[in-house]
Length: 240
Image (cartoon, rainbow, N blue to C red; front, side, top):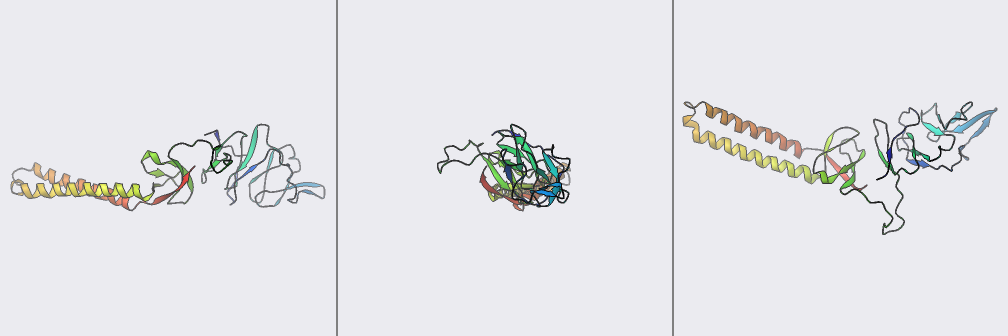
């Protein structure tokens, strides 16, 4: 699957944007974006909000922080063997040049960014092998995307909002039906025991424990079935 790294270059706040891998060979002054000197002050354009950043005394740094959006912008090429990656949340990361997947470190993002190359042809003969059952899932609560293995046969917990959902409607529906059947079974047992031993209950106090136990289990199972049948559904967006 490749290396998975997450190394933020500067402390940032979220500004909506797009993912981008910044080439090692790209010019550090980003021509065409309004860079230059104003009254002898060297400036560079922020790659997020397009504001001008004063880089006086910062030319030896690899990145600078924009005072307008608080995002990082490279002003020099990445160190040898490394590369810059811009997350969709605009967090600027640095990782190994050979990395195929990296994770955004921001608590409200945590995206897994896939840097694997696109297959060369329609046959996909050059594509990297993927983990069986691993897919991209859109959370039914916060709509963020995360990775989930559908072969686990379990509920999915979103790493962004920490809430639980069912990947696809079928899993939650089948579990809900199973608990409804168990509810009906224990309810029938409770009613049967109550009807069959009612005349002896006054002399055999332990029978009341059976009554209460059967009906209590039926209630718990019914609540569980409602939990599954009303659960939020996350959408499977396909293999990773």
